[in-house]
Length: 366
Image (cartoon, rainbow, N blue to C red; front, top):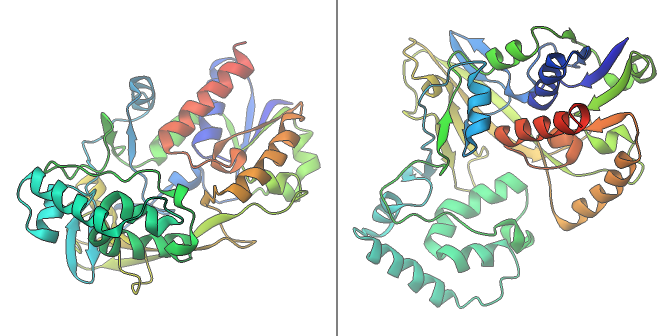
């Protein structure tokens, strides 16, 4: 008999399992996939650690979380500096002085700020009614048209004029020549890939792969006193209140017989016509020198039954629906819900780990 059945071997479940084991608890981790790690899983292709389910770049301002993950693996000094490709024109991200110089020839911060302010005033938007108006009211028309509009419409699968304004509360604008995408103090990629973290976390825990919780629900739940569930919360309750919306992704992996395909780990394609949102060249995450390279194109799409859900659609309708499921979840005495899908939140990796540690503290240290 186990103390905990943990459904899902991603960061939340693996962190919980590791901490529970430290406290003398016995856990069984199950996963329907053929590998551990959830969406942070890396696959070795031609000697390159390929982020199979999309690029994962660890970043945080939380020193405790940074030290926590570094106990499992050493991180490199990778700094996320994506570039945007708009119809063959290359721009630095996030919006900074390099971007403004390419757009308008602006050399000083005052020149760039004046140009943005001029465009904002010309737009004359006082109360933005949708995402398009909100973005233009923040950064002006040029940045919106070239670097926001197409990418956002592909990401969400609908026109910016049909998306609510609150999706973009702010847009990062830097009047410095700084291409570092994140403001966080700590940033990097695990040397050797994310698998090393998960393997360390689960090295003293029983793991059962190829196991679908919903196909063996009664039998599996009978194996443990409590369940830690990191899947879709609406699916757990058999969609009792309706289906929550998620966005999904299709990935197209390509091997190229050359050492360097695009010169950067992340290139965003911000025009509407290119069907994918970005292209990832994985070797650059770890400064690889392999003779071949692997690139991945990401195609966002609406989630349908059978697809992998990647992130929640946190608009008003879905958040209200989630509250109903949260009430059901709170009434479960022996089930703990966690992770992106279990709590219907768009967590970054450091936030997932922090949430798991808080859950462990509440569950086992109180």
